[in-house]
Length: 311
Image (cartoon, rainbow, N blue to C red; front, side, top):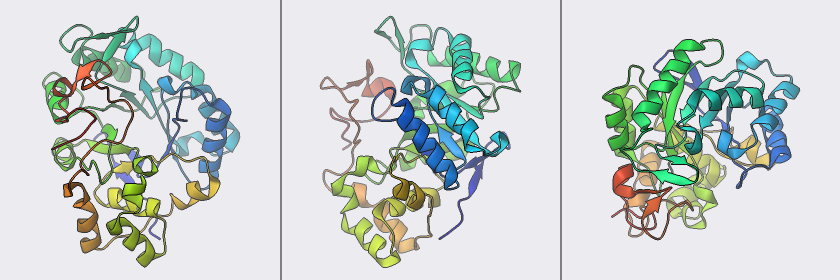
C-alpha cells in the first residue's frame, strides 16, 4: 500500500490527500461524529471535514481534543452555511466556539444563499462574490484562527465569476466526485487556477451499480483490496483529495490504505461515465423542477438535466 500523501495548496500549506467526512446522513449525530473522528485519528487520519450545517462541530472539536493527537498535526475543515451569507463573521465565530479551536480551512458551503428560509436569486445580495470578499477579510484579520479559505459546490462558471473579483484564490473546491461524475473539465480548470479539487461522496453512496461494475470489481480482485479502496486510489491518482465517510472501524482503517493503479486500470475506471445512463449525480438534493437549493442547473453551471443526469 502507498503511504497517504499530502497535496500542497496554493498558499503553501499541505492538505492530507485522504480525510474523514463528518456528515452523518442528517444534521446532528454528535456522538456518532465524535466516535468517527476518534476512530479515524487512531488509524492515522489527519484531515477532518465538518460543517456548521452538519450540526456536530462541538463533537468534532471534542474528539480532536480527546484523541491526544497534537492539534498542529490535524487539518481541520468547516463550512459557512447557506443561511449565513449575510453574517459571515458571526457564523465563523460561532463555528470556532463550537469547535473550540482554529480552522485550517473554511469553505463557502454552497454558492446559494437563503434568508429566513427563502432562496436568494443569483444576482441578489449577498452574492457569492460579496461573500468571498468577506471570507478574504476573515483570513486577513484572523491569521491565528484561520489558515485557508475555499469553496464547495462551485462549477467552472461560478468559479470563473468569483475569480474576476477575488484577491485571494480559493485553495480548494469541494464537490461531489466519483467515476459516475468525474468532472474532468472542472478538475482541469481548477488545476490551471491552482485550486485543488476535494471529492465528497467519493464512494458514490456505496452504489451497487458502481462498486459492482467490472472495471472496479476486477481491479479490487486483482489487488486484493476493497472496491472503496479502488475508488479512493483512483481519485488520489488524479490529484484529487478524498473525504470518505464511514462509521465502521474496519472500513475507516481500509479507506486509509491506498495503492497505485496501472495506467490501463486508471483509464478503464475513468471511462465508466461514458456508458449509457452512467453520467450522473447520485445525491438526494436534486428537485423534480431541476433545482438544487433554489437555483437551476444553469444558474449553478452544472450542465445537468432533471435528476442530476448529464447527457
